[in-house]
Length: 160
View 1 (tube, rainbow, N blue to C red):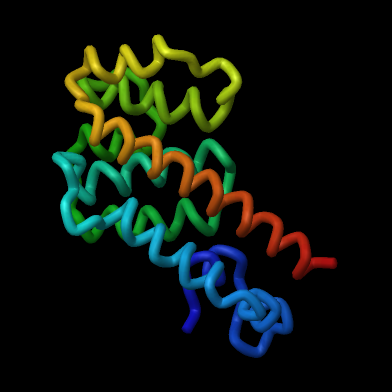
View 2: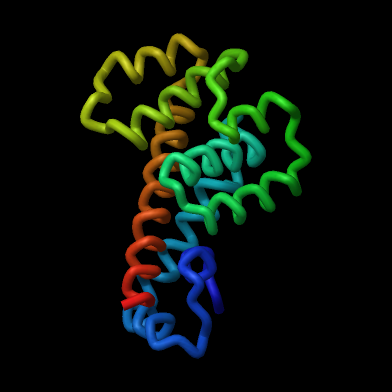
């Protein structure tokens, strides 16, 4: 099976690197399970799939990952998002709350994680997020940043 990281890295079943990833199938399976759980969880905690995909697309763009941007664009389009979610996905900052805070937080953690502090969490709380939502958001941001780095590394290995 080709997973989302294979797709983002451009790996195909006839590639040696595709097979090298499968030396540790638990990592491939775990990454795919994590992707599903952060993008389309069974219980979305009030952070629906369209919002999650818009944030994922935004993070992929911050990482300049064109294959993942295209993947998240396609997945987001299936959700038929409204204009504010499309603006969030596009990296805009003039958004209604809580989208503006979600966008700023995603940008902060993606671009300058060393500048995140307790005030960043307080801003999420002030925007109306509860603790489970903050954890879910953190998991989403962490996963998409992980995904972009793994895919970029695999692309580099493929090109060598």
